[in-house]
Image: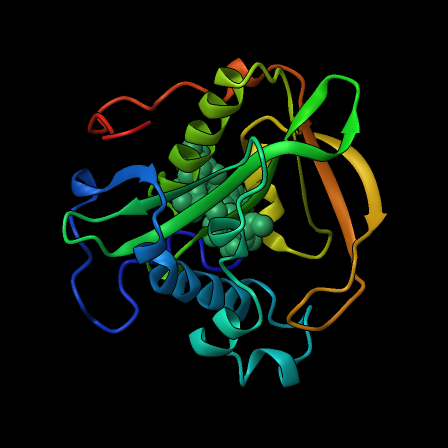
Length: 208
Ligand SMILES: CC(C)(COP(=O)(O)OP(=O)(O)OC[C@H]1O[C@@H](n2cnc3c(N)ncnc32)[C@H](O)[C@@H]1OP(=O)(O)O)[C@@H](O)C(=O)NCCC(=O)NCCS
C-alpha cells in the first residue's frame, strides 16, 4: 500500500487540525481546489499504472481545461458532489455520487469518484466522504452502491476495508486525460445503511 498514513505533511506545513474539517456540498468556487486534489491523486495513486508522459505534465489548469468539473457545471440528475474542507475553505478531498450509470439489480447507486489529498490520507476523511454519499443516496431512495476502481490501484483496499464485496472486473473506458483503457474492479454494498454512519467525534456537518 502506498501513501497511507504518510500524510503528515507534504511540504513541512502543519496540516489543519482534523476536527476543523467539514463535509459539505461542493460549489463552483471549490473547483480549483478539487482539481488540485484530483491531480495530486493521479500523480500519487496512478504512478506506474498510467504512463509518466501523461502524469508528469498534468496540472490543475490542464485538468480544468479538459473537463474536470463538468459534474458541477452540468450536473447529472440525482447526482451529488461533496468536498472535505478546512475552516479556511481549503479542499482536502471530494466525492461524487449518483445513480448507477450501469444499472444492476440492488446496486442502484454509484460512488463515481473519491479522492483525498495525499498529505491528509489515513485520517478518516475518505470514510466521511463515502458516508455523506451513502446518506445522500439513501435520501434519494437508493438502496445499494457500486464503485469501480483501477484493478492495479493499491487504494482499492480502502473499499475492502469498508466492507465492499468484490464484483469482478471490466475494461474501463479510455480516460479524458489519456491512458487506458485499463482494467477496473467493482465493489458493491447491497445495503447503504452499512456506510451511512458518521464516525464518532466528528463535527456536525453544515449540509450533510
Ligand atoms: C482511497 C482514499 C480516498 C481513502 O481516503 P482516506 O481518507 O485515506 O481513508 P480513511 O482514512 O477514511 O481510511 C479508512 C480505512 O481504510 C483503510 N485504508 C485506506 N487506504 C487503504 C489502503 N490503500 N490499503 C489498506 N487500507 C486502507 C484505513 O487504514 C482505514 O482503516 P482503519 O479504520 O482500520 O484505520 C485515499 O487514500 C485516496 O485519495 N487515494 C488515492 C485516490 C484513489 O485511489 N481513490 C480511489 C479510486 S477513485
